Length: 124
Figure: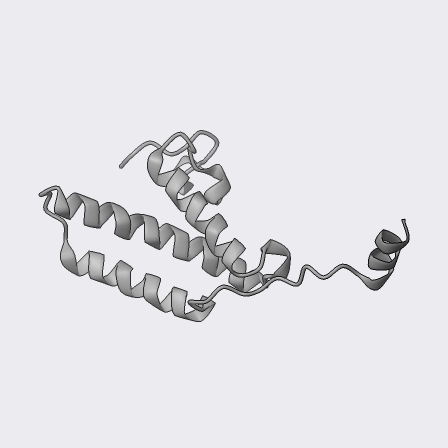
């Protein structure tokens, strides 16, 4: 079993378990940066964080993590490493289900200024 991240206690240690999130990842690692970039791109495609429901934010996290695992697995397979294809297919299918729930098209963001802002800009 690998060492837990600093500050994370395992139940066997008698402490409470602190859940970690994408924000807790070591962003020096390539996989972490790829997952965060994918999450940010998904959120941008959906019109921005302020336009997402809680479930859509969670789905963006899950889609980004699944995409990172799939991308890594495919790269390893192409590089000649043995990759459990049934596990890869399971993660790929999960990603595709999440992606279909979020939608495959970009959502336009309304950038039209409020009427009072527009009038002030025209007057001044």
